Amino acid sequence: MSKNHKSEYKLNNWVINTQKSTIPSMKETEDLSEELGIPPPEMTFLDSFVELRDNDSDFKISFNTRDALRGVSKKNELRVSYADHWANSRQTEESSTIKPSQPWDWTYTTRYNGSTSNVFSTSNNVNDTIPIDKLSDTNQPILFYDDVQLYEDELGDNGQVGLNVKIRVMPFGWFILQRLFLRVDKVLFRMFDVRVYHEFNSGVVIRESTGLESSWDAVKQCLPPTDATILSDEPTIQATLKMISKYANEQCTKWDGLGSLLDVCKL
Image (cartoon, rainbow, N blue to C red; front, side, top):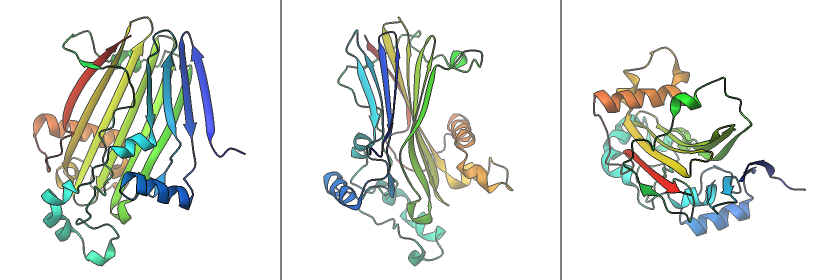
C-alpha cells in the first residue's frame, strides 16, 4: 500500500500533479545524507512535489524536496556573521544540539526556485507582472488547491525552518507560492518566496523570487510584545520584513538571496 497521497487535476492543456509523502525510513535518510553531503532536516518529506505540465508547449516545472535540499550550502555562512551574537544569545552551548560551528548551513536555507529544463529570461516588460489584486479576488472560484510541505526542522529547539509549496488553479490561470520561512531565536528571521503565475492563453509563465531578512531585535520591535505565537505567523513576519527592508534598509548577514528577481518563460 502506497504511503504517498497523490492528486491530479487537468484543465485545458495543463496537467497538475501533487504528491504528499511521509518521512523516509532510516535507510533512506542515511542514503539521502550521503547524497547531499549534509544531514537532512528532521522532517523531510522526500517524495513530496508539485508539478505542472503544458501538453501543448512541453513546458514543465516542478517543486520537489530533493532538488530543494541540493540548494542548501555546504558552508556555514551564518557562522561568519553571527557566531558571537549566537553565543551571547544562548544560555549554555550544551543546551543546543545545533552549533554555530557546524560546517554546513544548519538553517537549511535554499534559494531553490523550481526544477525546469525550460528557459526563463529576465524581463523588463512592465506587463510581465503577477496580478496580486486579481489573485486576491475572493469572487474568483478556486478549481483546485493543494498545500505540500517539503521539509521542516526545529533547529535543535533554537527556532524553525520550513519549505512549503501551495498551488491553486482558477478559471483564468494558475498560481504557485513556494515559501522558505526561517526563524533563528534571538538571531534573525529570513524568508525566500518564489511565485510562479500563468494566465491561460497568455503564452508566458512569470516567476518572481524574493528574499527578505532582518535581525531578531529589529523584527521584535515592530511586533506586539505580549503575543509570542506571532513570531511563527508567516504573513505577519513577511509584512514586517518587507517594511523593514523598505524603510530601514536593515540586514544582518551577507546572504546572497536578498532582493527580488523577475523572469519569464515564453511558451
